[in-house]
Amino acid sequence: MKKIFRFDDINPNTNFIKLEQLIKIALKWANEIWLCYSPFSHDPKSKYHEHQKVPNELEKERIFPSILKALSNYNIFYKVDKVLDPNILFVLKEKYPSIKLVSHGLVHVDHRLLSKTAQEMSILITNSLVKSNIFIPPFNHYNKKTEKICKENRILLCKFEHGWLHAVYNFFDNNHLKYYVHTFEIDENWLQNWFEGKK
Image 1 (cartoon, helix red, strand yellow):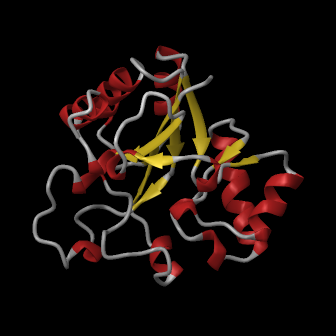
Image 2 (cartoon, rainbow, N blue to C red):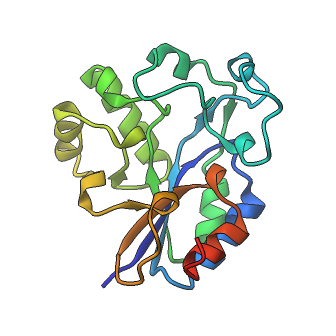
């Protein structure tokens, strides 16, 4: 059975040196590594981070400020500062053939709040950029519009209900097949310890 480990929110703030180390650790268990591409992000130094004290190293990798939630005003998610060239991911994929690039939306916004045409633009552009036929909705939220767009365009809508477990909130079970995590939540030591059952 295929074992998949997924890194969500790969964005301009991602620490790619650390990400490569995380990939190496995960590949000791996984058959496939999914990198979920989010092209735009807020700058950790932007005004939307003012509520925080100096962000720690992990927080600096966030795609948007932690004060924002799925149902926050979606306009704020549009006020981005940085963009990630997808070619960085293609270089990683060439180095590690087990990597699969997938779309996480043009902007990390709850797609249920968007019109069908806005969702369509988000999904199709991002999938085109990373040459993917898989869409993972931000916040794991989607609606019938999302489902219709994906069906019409032969895109697999990856649903949380399909057996995905978040590594931070679940113990590692070698028999489970699908895990995901965000790089801003963990470091290399944490992931190694998690796989060894120490987390």
